[in-house]
Amino acid sequence: MLRTFIAAIALAAGIGGEGARPDLPAAPGRPPGAVLGIVWNETGFAETKLTRVKSVTLQPFGRRVPLLLGGASATAYSPDRRWLALGNGTDPSIQLIDLRRMKQVGVVKLGLDGWVTFLSWQGGSLFAVVDGETDRAVAVVDPIGRQVLRRHRLNRTILATQAGPGTVVLITGPRNHIGPIELTIVGGKGMTSVPVREIAGGWETENDSSGYRARQAKPGLAIDAPGRRALIVPAGRTVAEVSLRNLAVRYHKLSEPVSLLQRLRNWLEPAAQAKLIEGPQRKAVWLRNGLIAVTGADYAVSTDENGDPDVAAQAAGLSLIDTRTWTIRKIDDEASDFARFEDTLVAFGVTDWAASAKPPGFGLVGYDLGGNKLFQVLEGTGVSWVEAVDGLAYVTLDEKLYAVVDAATGHVFARARTKKPLSLVTD
Image 1: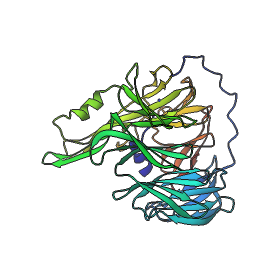
Image 2: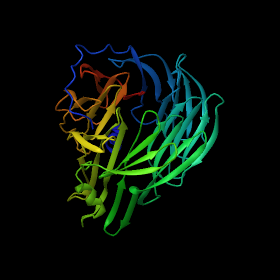
Image 3: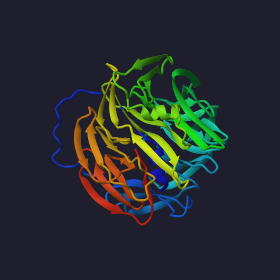
Image 4: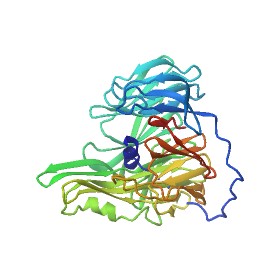
């Protein structure tokens, strides 16, 4: 499944006190009546449709809006949630939907080449990140006037993207090799960048008589709620703190490593056996009270005795970094991804994503935002993809089977089967 592959390649990140475990609510909250979903054609990207679905049964109802070819590569609600913007990647553009009437109200062509990989609607501006072989850029769009106001082109590899207040913040690496990263801010005043020399990132390949090899290094990016600072978290002891007001960079040594560094050493000093792809990847999110959640995985893909790809990955676990003391505490050894909800963090992850059958796993583990464990459900199930919508965790069990879980209590409302592959429009 495409989403399972993407989920395995795009992974997650984050200390707090050991406070007493809070009491769980007596009962799960009442789920919303409906959520937005995208129904996919089973044979490709054509004929996808936006529709409302019942939140627990996932049964579509009401009017459906046809999407452009390759549509829904990224989505963003307007601030009042009356409109939805959807990106696509065939002829990069943004499709605008009036959600009250469930009707397309416009299309804005971006004039770039690549896929729309990120959208953020802030005030009267819509930010679109386009990533492709030809173009890497951030387009600033006027959704009311249906026009592109500015195109900010990047001559670097995009490694991570987050929204800040009135801005989009990116981590970029050198083109075609691993080297020092930069942090870039795109907003109303244009585009500014600052080098972050002590952290490496990027992508590099070799193709010679010994075979094809690729290496990656993708740090995580977290932004605090006021939008004053960003933290860049690689697979190592050093993290970078960047002021988003004046782009001042400070480095901090954590009291414990984010993860064991054997995998990192492997891609810095490769073994004689040819590898197809390897390297660390991290995901991060800023929580509350100066805490940052961090997770991810370290990848290695070698060839077996038959010459076929053999994927190996080491989960980084889920850790919390305390930016007040620059200490770190691991709260979960098995996680390689998470979904953030208003008051909880749901950890999951499958690193053996290339197995012919989904391997057993630890299911979902819920934590409060201080790192206290709240629940564990779906034990024995390998979970590689979770969509967060209105306090519900939608867990992909197979291409058409989903578990609907209350993210505050772990209550499983249902296991819902759909007629066609479905993805949810996340918050």
